[in-house]
Amino acid sequence: MTVLEADLTVLPDPGLLIGDGRVSESSGGEFTHVYAATGKPTRGVSMAGAGEIDAAVRAARDALPGWRATPLDRRRDLLAEAARLIRREAETIAQLTTIDNGTPYAIAASTPLLAADLFTYNAGWADKIGGEVVGTWPVPALDYTLDEPYGVVGVIVPWNGPVVSVGQIVAPALAAGNCVVLKPSELAPWGCLRIGELLLEAGFPPGVINVVPGGPAGGEALVSHPDVDKIHFTGGGQTAKRILASALETLKPVGLELGGKSANLVFEDADLVAAAQQAMTGAILLSGQGCILGTRILVQRSIHDAFLGTLSTILGQIPVGDPSLATSVMGPVVSEGAADRILGMVATAQKQGNRLVTGGERLGGDLSDGWFIGPTVLADVAPTDFIAQNEVFGPVLAVTPFDTEAEAVTIANSTRYGLAAYVQTDDLRRAHRVCAALEAGNIWVNGFLGIPPGAPFGGVKQSGQGRLGGIHAIREFTRPKNVWMAL
Ligand code: NAD
Image 1 (cartoon, rainbow, N blue to C red):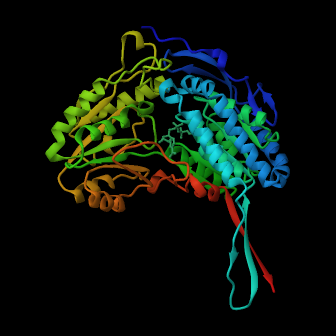
Image 2: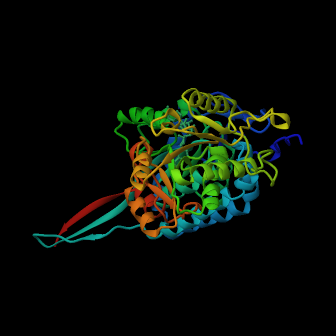
Image 3: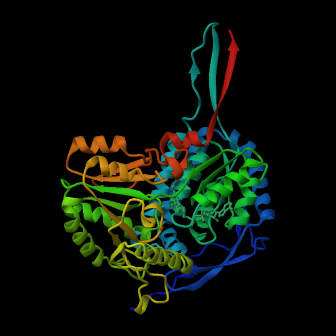
């Protein structure tokens, strides 16, 4: 069946969202956004250049005194109202997510609900941010802290999950009293722009949230802008290095949520089918384009062959296809460039001796106009191999055997990344031992059902610094001021 055209009637108004107005004539030029499932253009994206970034930062700066003075209960109610509107528009935002980056609607449907939950959750913090009283010595005094917002925060998000990123990052930044300039990727601007519109509808004062899609030039203008007080960046490690270099001039603090090559440790005592189903998600969720996905599968040698067989069978049954259909579990990758890069990495792995078990090619027939790649498994992967050490960001699993628990942990920790890890075992003591030994910010044992809004989220090593989620996200966007008063 031919892949359906994208329904462009749901796209938000054109232009950048600065203050309460739209700017269509932008110095960053226009990017032709393409629907990944058909390879056809959707609409031009106005890209923020330095001038528009400056206008957005000025709008945020002008709004800051009023936003900081807004009573906390009002701030709380605005976040709660935003959550209500995002839920009201969930179907449209899900459609926009599918158009943004090809996420299958079956998966995209949950993303606005997750974002809304994060707004509701952070609404709960908005009226509880204050400070603490600090004990003093040797002289009696009153010492207390005031948890204050940074001011204007620049938020740079990638294309793979922008709507959830808004909930994870923008909601706590606003709850903490910051004004935000949000820069989505030009590859996936639509969902973020719609949520920006909804925040204005909810009653956020103009300038408190600005949405300025763009590419590297817009991003650099935001990072180097002297009136931006903090940057929060989600994306790849190479971009993070450029961002840190740009932030150097103004000594700006930068929060980093970066990539991963997360290990999934499958022990011989695990439920084999459940473990294979868990491993499957590393390839098929967002077509493998998720930072936390378990893409290195470490399997105890005694069950290695049986596991590989079960995994291949399960992956062979995955409905890959038109992302707008409810029956599709896996859709395309984001762009032609991404498809070429992913297949190039698979070819390199094969040249280095890794065995292609399944997948490894573009899908043809009705899917040939889009950028569909079948779920791919590479076996006989040594821990130091190229494919074990580098993030593919595509539907590719690398399978490595191990003999002992200690060896599994050593292999799991042997990359420069440390975002997530997964453990499949029926042995409770082992689960606790292994979780304590793994170098990762987030670990899932025997399953994966998302990240609770209250849980800390972030990476160690080159997967990032700082934490989102729970009180940690509020701390990410506030800093304590200490006051000492003689008594
Ligand atoms: P990317 O680093 O290419 O781009 C991310 C964002 O940075 C985009 O908005 C882009 O326009 C902007 N950008 C690019 N160059 C810039 C520059 N010089 N200055 C400022 N901004 C710039 O990443 P991507 O391809 O969009 O996303 C994939 C990467 O993101 C993967 O590595 C993935 O693991 C990571 N990621 C991490 C998380 C997390 O929470 N840890 C979540 C999603 C994605």
